[in-house]
Image (tube, rainbow, N blue to C red):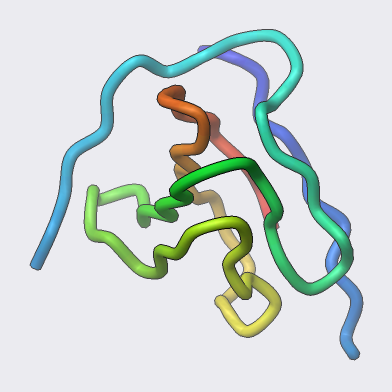
Amino acid sequence: LLDIYSLPFGENGQGGIGNVADGQPGFTADGTAIVADGEINVFSLDGKLVVSGTGSVEFASLEPGIYIINAGGKSYKVMK
């Protein structure tokens, strides 16, 4: 298994995952959202698209768990 990135978040029908990346993620977390250049897709572990957007996506309201974030053409496992 590759590293799982832990994202620090404060209190305040489609599927498909490919090209799981290692190394530093191609996105940042600002406390409530994931920020990256271009399109961002967040998938549940069963491959369902749970949120998507361009430039940033709101992530704080999602339940704690493990997600797959696709940003910059690569996918990353993250734990919230």
